[in-house]
Each structure stands twice: as C-alpha cells, then as structure tokens.
Length: 305
Image (cartoon, rainbow, N blue to C red; front, top):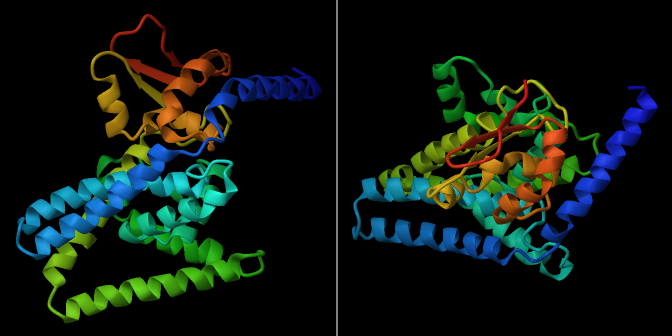
C-alpha cells in the first residue's frame, strides 16, 4: 500500500476506534478512588494489628503483599488522571490517592508516573522502556529481573530523568522525588533505630519486593510478550477468560489481562476494559491484534504472529 493510503487508512481506523470507546472515557472513576482508599486503609490496619501483636508477622507479610499488589492499580490509574476523569476540580483527589499509594508501594508518585508514561511512549524499546528490563527467555533470569525491578526503576529514573536536567521539568521533578525519598527513607531508618526492623521488613520491605515482582511479571512481562514490536495494535496482548471464572480472573488480574485496551486508550478506567474490548473487537481483529481466549467461547482466537 502506498504511504499516503496507509496514513489515510490509519486515520480511518483511529477515528472508528475513538467513536467506539467514547462512552468509556471522561467520567469520575469512583470505583478506582474507593479501591485506592481501601488499599491505604487496609495497609494501615494490617500494620497496626501486626505491630500490636493481634496477628502474626508472617500473616501480615502475606496480607500486605496482596494489598501492595492491588495498590498498583489505583496508583496506575492516578498516573493517567483516570480517577478525576474530566473533572479538573477533583485532580487533587486523583493526585492524593496516587501519592499515598505510591508511598506505601515505595514508589514516588511523580517518578513512577514519569517512567510509566515513558513505557507508553516507547513500549518494548530496549533502552527507553523501563519495563523492558524483564525481557528474557530464561525463566531464572525473568524471576531475578522481576525481584529486582524496584532497584532498576530507581536506576532508570535517575539515568533517564533526574540526570537529564536539560529537559524542561526534569530538574523540578527530580528535586521533588529526592525530597520525598529522603523523608520516606528517614522514617524507615528511625523505625529501625527504635527496634522495629522486624516489623519494617515483614510488613513493608519484603511485601514491596514480592508485590513489585508479581506486578511487573503479570502486568509487564506476560502482557507484552514477546517484547519485540512497537506497532500500536500489536505491542501488547489481550487474554480473555470466558466461563464461570471470568469475573474472578479479571479482578485477580486487576483487568490488566486486557492490557492492549489500556495501551490503546489509557484514559479508560481499568474496570471498563472488558466492555471496551467487546466494542473494539472488530477493529482489533482487522488490525491483527494479539488476542488469546480461554474457556467457553464461540469466537476464534486471533494469535497473529
């Protein structure tokens, strides 16, 4: 197809897709806000119960690992402004939830947002995509990379954002991030000094490492396999589970099994991905998107190479 016709075809596809997803964007995402508040309160409650000896530390570790895994979702939604939607008057709520969820997940909100937006802009790029760190064909290497993603994120932020002060806004962001980290790690230091090192490790540090590994494995490694293309409709996968376990799987996966929908239209709230996918499916199939289906279905899966 000549380049001019290819561009016109691409514009037509985008126009059709935009019309189809219009009902799923712009609203205030109260479910995301409530999820964020639930995560914050749950983390505080579990820590309090464990420190008071009401529950054992090992149980607190397990529970907080799950809480921090879920915490990624409201943090992620806040990064895209999805909690406030088009309601600019509620951006304070959007950013407050993002900041607090970032703190308990040991990610600084502005740093995480900067890197996540780079991931969207340069998906599957070896140098410019922070999530590309987990690409590997060796299972042991994948495991080790997932377990060290928290350290790599910090390295990536300082290398690609903080030390590139010639980019407008980077210096201000870096100063803010350093100040927040200074306060956060000072709190952790004094918790150790006052003898709470076991609680700190069991209730915060270890859950952070484990939850971060789970997050990057399921939300970055699996969803972007084989990490080789940056084509708009083919750089990310969709995994559809049909049947009695569909809703359970969607919630356990925090709906990121529909990750392609998020990459195509990041302003759609996460809990609306399945409906948006159903409406967009004819477009996705024509564009040879990677769609994998399991369970009861009368549709043919699209697994284009």
